[in-house]
Amino acid sequence: MAGRPDFTTPGTQGSGQTVAVQNRPEIATVDLTDDSTATPGEYVKSEVYAPTGSIYRLRGMYLRAEPIGSGSTGTHRFYLTNTNGTRTLEGKSQYNSRIIFQYYNWKIVDTQQPDTDAALVGALKSMTATENSPITVVYNNDSDADQVDARDIKLLFEEESY
Image (cartoon, rainbow, N blue to C red; front, top):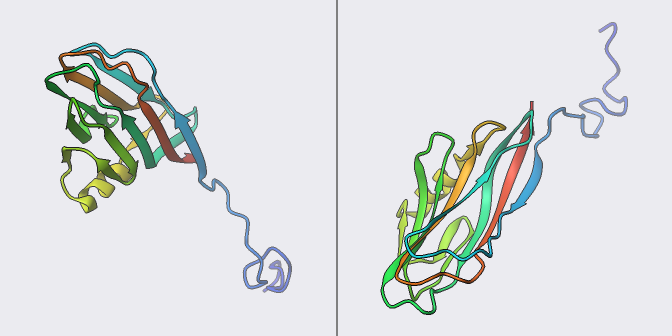
């Protein structure tokens, strides 16, 4: 066909080389680790916005909160809300237990929502952030003592530019 390069030309399909693609997703990591004291009843919020001209799609995360050492009753929890403010993921433990979320599921937690691994992965992968609408990670100390240990919040995103 006139005007088309021969398929053996480097950089064309059929030549055995990869054809360049615009707007390939990039991997972005965001570290929101917080070492402030969370007092009893406090909600500590951390928000992630995508850069201008991009969308962040959540692909994995690491959350960790240590037990509340001087507590005697209550719970603590992490939860995430999507761009519309809907609580999408939640993990809760008693004050004397740690909370850990790694990659796609809760490793150490007393109760979780969603309560099945398949639903949890689906909920996680549905979470997106834009330059105007964040993903919010909330830590709630609902115990009777201060949570003084750092809370690890590390998020892995697929970043798509438009």
